[in-house]
Length: 171
Image 1 (spheres, rainbow, N blue to C red):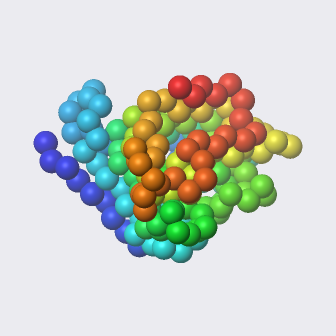
Image 2: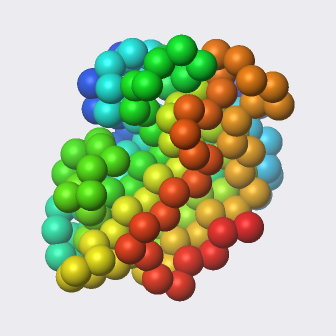
């Protein structure tokens, strides 16, 4: 099998699931395997950008049962010298943002497994809606977030952030 890279310079994200359901990105080139043969890179140094974005379009229009697994994901800003907000994987509303008004309604039962995420401010960020509709059943497991040593590839703020979620599993 080959190692493959999806690379872009986007002010939003390289890959976007826009209210999509039952989508899978599996970076392993071995059926049922756990190798990380797909790299997703957003080279943009602009703020509020991401590698993979799961975008809710509103109530009953979120991304549901989507999976991102076995990938290497990073963005272009050196987190040791900048405060630029970037995301490896972000599950939220209609903007790539950590804003408390950018909640993702009905981004339910999404799975993020065995990814290596680095050189971002937030590794995995999932934000539901506390007032109307929290995200339900997010699974985050076996991810490697950040390098072994502090460097330009470090995580700027947090490895995993979940807010307004219910019945999640993080391990």
